[in-house]
Length: 258
Image (cartoon, rainbow, N blue to C red; front, side, top):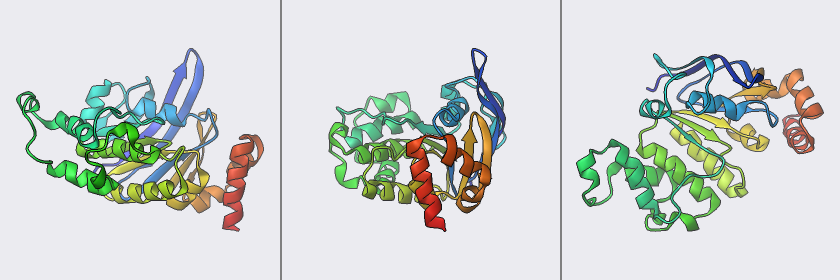
């Protein structure tokens, strides 16, 4: 089983501005772990630091391996993969070609020059897992928004990522796509670490196992969905200063729990 991701006292500063000020949390296989919070809370900055895109201090350990301070490519080699708010796929290539490129990270240089014979087992598994089996020959550019996000997740699966850090994976999706994505995350979280940065409170409520709430670069609350929603500090932030859209969304969630 994949080791836990343990983040301890993470700090990130930009020209004296403290974007993340001492954040600690952990994520384990078998759960869908969420980071939530108002805009500017430091959620994406946390995963930027974990993946080496932003310099951070403190600790972010995957098992016995420290991630902070390593270059991006070495963190990827340790099995840490991430997605961005806009899917990073090759629009002009087919679904299969996108996956073949992703899978090429585990192939020797000479084999990359030879034509593939059939579809590899890892690609077949990723296609089945993400529901893209029927889109094998489809150019990625004409996939739906949700399918592009699933393709990006499939590309991490064929790389055998141990950790998937997903930045707002359901933004812009239809309700059916949100549901399918949540079910996909639950499936892949069985053996992998899945950490989701998200603004969609209904999606969080339906699919989160545990939640860390960030506010102004610090941990406001942590626990199950029910525990976090019942925390007066969370209610004050979301129902007071987080802005109209987030306030309305959280109010609906809290109301449903009553």
